[in-house]
Image 1: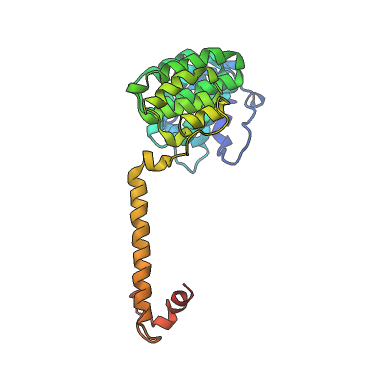
Image 2: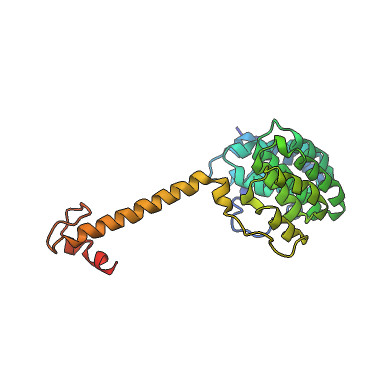
Length: 284
């Protein structure tokens, strides 16, 4: 059973779906103050609410709770909220990966040490660590003075590129380049690319990164097919499907040329050719 909540925290149980809303609600205007931080933490972690029926308003209550904690800059909520990243491997990955980092950003620099330690812990999965890194970027976006604290953390994590997955390295590069425009991190980023330790489908190659950082005016070499490099099996499957499609159409056209108007259609539908594929074949 879900825990019980008193007014005004209980109002979050009725706010419901936030999809389509551009702005967060003003939770302070609902009467939520620092006094209610413990209850909001409890609601954010409430298992019964997190796994409530997807058609109910209650299932959205934990999201409203962590948003309220963000607006209240609730530093005591950082460690409890970090545990929600575990749900990234469950059913709530979109909201937790995209929305929770914004709450950490509002809480501010107090979240940095906890997020740093979470990111550094290789026992966590790749995507939860990516969410932690994104949360650090959000802190900087809300508090630019923390930039000098966060860039060394992300750079130090990228420096472990040899022992990390390529997609984690790519996300760290994206955070440093697109998120923070950290030209000072260029040396370690270059090393990661030189070691072929970065998934190219995220940010392109080292030349693309230099261009985005303003370190290079234009490419010096032709751009490669990054999907073919990173996902050759997908590219090969598409090639085979295209070849099969072309062969199928060629064979169908050959059969169609030998059919009379009143013959059974070549597709096996049982209909006469003139009532099914004849017109399309002649137009093709």
